[in-house]
Amino acid sequence: MREIIANASIASNKTRAGLSKEESARFFGPPPLIAGEDQAQYEAMRDQISAAVGPLDFLEEIWVNDVVSLVWETQRLRRLKANFLKADVARGVHRILSPLGSTDSSRNLAMKWAAREPDAVAKVDAALAAAGLTIDAVMAQTLAANIRQIESIDRMVGGAEARRNVALREIDRHRATLGAALRQAADEVLDAEFKEIQPSLAEGEAA
Image 1 (cartoon, helix red, strand yellow):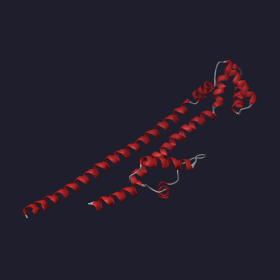
Image 2 (tube, one colour; image 1 turned 180 degrees about the horizontal axis):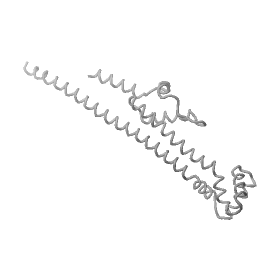
Image 3 (tube, one colour; image 1 turned 120 degrees about the vertical axis):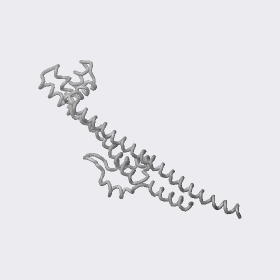
Image 4 (tube, one colour; image 1 turned 120 degrees about the horizontal axis):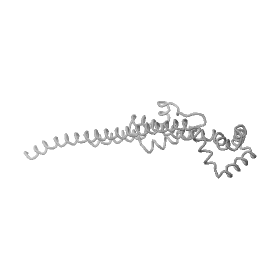
C-alpha cells in the first residue's frame, strides 16, 4: 500500500509540473500574436496563469492554454479599441468645431490638430475653452461617430471572456470528477484491506 501511495505521489508531482515550454510549443504551436505584440509578455502571462491554476493533467493543460489565449485576446481587443478611438479623434474634433465655422475649415483644423501642429492645437484648445468643453467632449463625439464598431468590439470582448469562464469551469468540473474518482478508489482499497484483515484476526483468535 505504501508503495502504491509513493508511486502515486511521484506521478502527481510530475503531472503538476505541466508541459515544458518546448513540449507546449510543439503541441500548441506558436503563440497567437499579431504585429506589435511581444512574445516574451505572452509567455510570461502564460507562466503566471499556469502557475496559478497548476494543471493536473493534459486535459487541464489544454484548458489552461485556452484561458491564456482568451485572456490575451481580451487585452488585445481592449487595447485596439482604445487605439481605434485615438486614431479617429480628428472626427470628434471636427464634430465639435463644425458648428463654429465651415465644414472644410473645421475638418482641416481637426486634421492639423490630430497631427499636433502647434497653431492648430492652440486654436482647438481655445475653441473648446470658449465653449466650456474639454477633451472628454471630443472623445465623446469620437465614440458616437464609431459606436457600431465599438459595440462590435465590446461583443467580441464579452465572447472571449465567456469562453474563458467556460474553460475555467471545465477545469473545476474535471477536478471535482477526478477527486470523486480518487476518493472512491481509496475507499475501495481500504475496504479490501479491511476485509483481508478481518479473517486474519479471526484465525488468530481461533488459534
